[in-house]
Image (cartoon, rainbow, N blue to C red; front, side, top):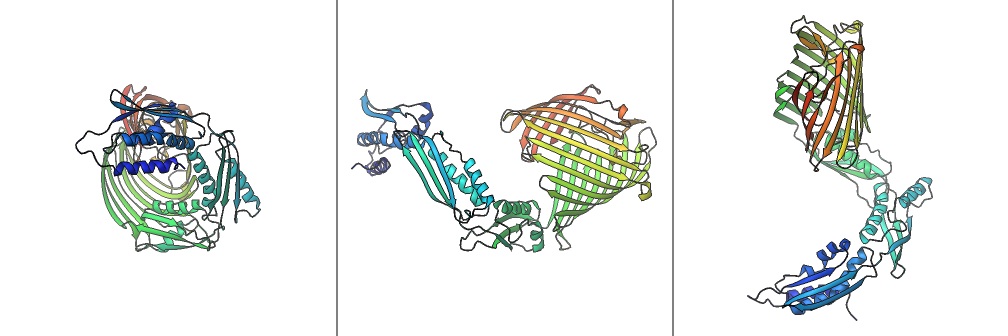
Length: 585
């Protein structure tokens, strides 16, 4: 009885290694003439021993004849993995002009195709519940090797893993493949598939077991935990907790796991292992913006202020058009998922002839639920305004605020599909420490749509309005100006607004629209064409959108898309260079 092709190939390889070297003689050489369809050529040239051993020092005529005899069996094995079970193969060895030539002719024939499949699940999953019946129907509907599909070994293995994954991710982390069978009829070129999965027991979560905490209290991890003891096992919940820990700034590294012991499926402890970040850090930075000029920055951070896991941060920022000193105190996440913080800021700006000096004190509460982030706050503004060619004023306001953001995009760092919505509302009243009654509303939308893997369009729009008898007494943060890197390109930063004296100040109305087309020539580099239009004014009828358009380069940097744009402002009649990183969400 002849040995199987793979065993024979292994014996041939051992024989090659055992053959004495030929010393100083030249290495035995030969060529292979392979006739085969292009779809199978690369696989055979990569894996056939005739190719792999060519040029080996221990190769000789005897070993070449052996490999030639074994080649048809190897070809059959490789083609079978791609669904070809009845190939025609001819192998011959001949000598031409003193050189050995192996001639290998392969006709794969027709592939074997799937006639049907059977998928069943035993174990605790098979409890007759409507929910599990629906899950099983979905697993069968998602099975990729449908009737008529070519039977390929790699796809068969992937299909089994995919079916098993549906159990492993939800409730059954100890699930396994109990039986898998592919019954092939080479003559009829058909295959019937059968898979049986054993779900094992249904698991439930237990309490947290936390390792690695030294500086911070266990309550910090517990408040980030979305898992409740007794609820069904879900790998998505484990990943959510791990992501929250890694995004919290307190930890450099975190893992979350359970032990899937089928003998102990209930109240399984959730093991959390963390590596803490240093609590204090002092950082320095420099940069440049085409909006506000050169920038220097000093930042201090303490993640464990007063040993209570309060996050204290302070930032001194010096820019060409803006200088600021601010601090924030963030409290740990509440059990209901709220993030509370206090802020203080003093800032001076000198933009388009308007000089403002302000002090802001505030408190904020925010919460993220899925794609939505909602925030409420209260801020007190005290501002002094100076104008070139006109008289400035002092302003004060106590402003309650509301903000809602929905981020429904495929990737927050490099969005290619989806949309982002942002709505804001602010109010002030003379009866509550404010110089003027006003109500402000603002909305922003960005839509991303891919036409292909390389082509994308980005549409953006902004609308804003302030309901008040005039703009006097309203702090500049609640009025509108536009123009600059991520608003209307082709114009200087906040240069579109209301003229007062020799300065441009904010108005009570804003309208802006933008369209951009991006073409990615490589995975990292692309180019864009765009057109922007926008204006700010004191009355809706005075809005006269300024047009800007141009070309840009795009690079997918580690911190988001880097944009370098050259834009022409139709109203300003000049070209401007704009540089920005990422998207303003």
